[in-house]
Image (cartoon, rainbow, N blue to C red):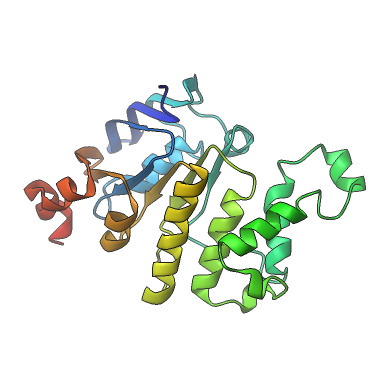
Length: 247
């Protein structure tokens, strides 16, 4: 079966500095893949090369077997690639429900139909589903800016999934979230993967979060893959412990 995402021998240089060197891995349909590594290991550069925000120096990115190397984020988005950012992308003055509808509108119909069609662009039902699934229905009419940080992270994740993407890349979803809300976030992401067969890649520093959520983990160090395997294999690998877990 063709992987949802294939990264083949990806390299990115900045002058004389090699930030990512010869990285290759696949993401299978329905998989949660974790991407970890110490600071400066190349995780963010790799993510940005995959998502078209940085053009790789060499190598290939394929989506469902199609070469998408260097495509702009908007073009990847139209092909079913969603993402979250380290910094929240919610609109604080809009309600939680309005944020979800806005996140899905870009993928529904044409500009003309969005201008003259219903205000919810036909997304009210899916927004309601997302509100219930991510347990945000009680705050549906609240301004997003009034939510706790953990609730905003849940909303941010729900927004990324609103358009039913083929693949979602989550950039440090656990960052700054308190332990109670972190458990809720991990449980909802795992449930979304299990119930809807969603495929996603997660960059994260919180090792407990990654090890509890992901099916497989890729470890980067100095721009190269140090280890790839199950959470148990990665956690017990001496090279990983020395390069990352021991820091």
